[in-house]
Length: 126
Image (cartoon, rainbow, N blue to C red; front, side):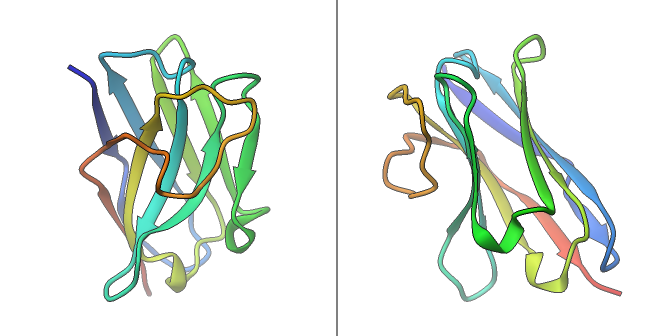
C-alpha cells in the first residue's frame, strides 16, 4: 500500500527555519516525482517545489526560490523541504505528493499527482 506521511511542521517566528519530511512507503522515492504543495486558509492549494524521478531535477515556485530547498534521501526513502527565512505568508498546511509517471522535469501542477499525504501545519508568526 502506497503511503506518504509528512512531519516537521510547527510554529516558527518570521525569519526562522523548518525542515519538513515526507516519508514514503509502498514505493521508492526515486521512482516517482515528488512534489510539495501548500494550502493556506481560504486559498487554493498551490505547488511549492518538486523533484523529478529521472535525474533529480528540481523546481521551485517564484515565491520560495532562494529560501526553500527540496532534497531526496533514497536510503531513508524520504523527501525533505528545508525552509529558511520564513515569512508569515508561508503559513499553510504543507502536503507532499507522488506522481507515478516518471519524468526528467517535474511539475508543481496538482493534476499529475496521484498520491497525497495528510499534511503538516506550518505557522509563521511572532
